[in-house]
Length: 64
Image 1: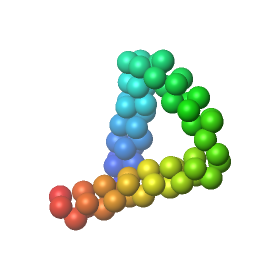
Image 2: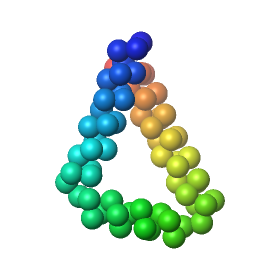
Image 3: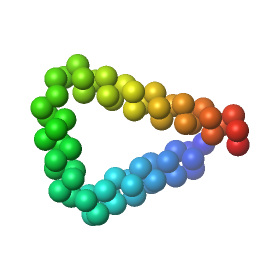
């Protein structure tokens, strides 16, 4: 179980790092856009992304 968690954390860090390496100006633009949104919308976006991630994990467990 710990091995899977470390793999997941490692993949997250790789993808996050690649975004900053390949498109730093897009990251800045996205942060400015998000900063302009009301807090309730940012929370909703975060909840939707978390739910989508949970659904992907569930589907991977069911179909793998």
